[in-house]
Length: 427
Image (cartoon, rainbow, N blue to C red; front, top):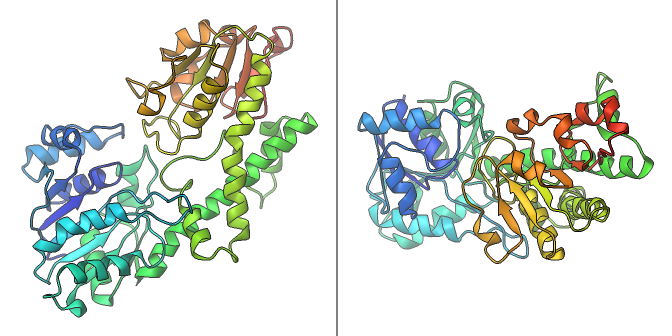
């Protein structure tokens, strides 16, 4: 049972806003804080400024019940949750500037009894750094009484509201008391097990979880390259291998994106470069996959070099609008820049305008899915959005097709394919 009645959640993005909404759903008064006024205005209207199933209902209820409001400045509260970005620098060390900026807003408000939780995925030592940063900003406070904890998110985009409740959580404190208070707060909505440890171990646990997945994805992506060279259908190969009771190979794709798996392993590499050889190699393998897809696409384009090309999907995973670190964007930009004479028709059902990274590119258009396919000689499936499952064999017949997700494996295996010039790459 928590004694905390009022929480300020700093950062109303893909993790911060769901956390704010689920706390408010369970009776906590929540102040959402974000530097983006568009996000603040949307929340105050009971709306969600991005795509996340079910979140809209939670936000609308919380706002209507007076338990959630948003602002651009941090108000005083019993607890502060920092859910801000932690990108990496050119040398793959973590950029802590967003965390420090959030701390700058919290520090003047502290009286010494509040709980400060870092939810942002961070390298070992970041929570301790946050505690020291706050202490330096407020030398009048007793550092020994400062309650700082780390509680990394471990939810899947598209299922966030369910997994906030059902997934186990790890909470690490700079002190046992901080860990326990954070556990008590998260127990208001988390029905699964909440495990407590020290802050550095909690930080490392999140990095290890995502690095484990990255290594396994790298194995699948490497298999796709090997299979392509040997003329083997990688989707069938993996399906057959996974019939072994102790084998569970993941599915390959065009690369790895998102704010976690594409970023977190580098924090381990930066912290222990000599000891993290496998983790580094997995990152390099996955980072090389978009370039390989570009090469395969250009081979297909060469058979009809003047015709438009359809690129289906820009998000980093299916059925969301999150474009962070998306390999699909990297592929689209590289293809467009290397082939300025070709018109690339992009379909992404979860966005209304192309992201800013396309501002200087003149040969890319965002169009409806069917229009992109119908007008193109080459079709590249980069994201397995549910909408693309409705694409028919008739729409693809006679076109060069590269399916990087295996979503159309049934179509490309159809008897009509062989006589229709429809081709499928193991990308």
